[in-house]
Amino acid sequence: MKVRGTGGSTIGRGDLVPHFEVTARDGRRVRYGELWQRRSLVFVALLDGGACDEEYAAQLLRREPGFAAEEAALVISADPVERFPRRGVVVADRWGEVVFSRAVEAGADLPAVEDLLEWIRFVRSQCPECPP
Image (cartoon, rainbow, N blue to C red; front, side):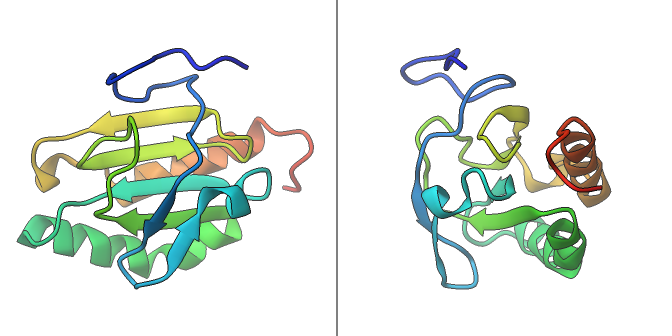
């Protein structure tokens, strides 16, 4: 699998997630290498502050058990990751192939939490090795 974009372009469908290490909003360190090949990824980049960002993070955290049930890691962070949007979402399968990416200007433009769960369900349905 090849990485489509290079340089400063934002990651997109078909690209591979770079290995990264960030601090999640709950304070834990997340190393992508520990998730890679084990869990799908829902990475939500939120800038610090802002009522919309805070409400969105709260909505995500309320639905975290749903992501876990689908064998997906939910990572919410304000730390920059190479080629990831500064505010937005990246969804990737367990092998790091991006299936959905959206950069937004305002927190109100972030995708619905249920839509992110649908992307993860889609990823699992595409994976013959993954249990239903």
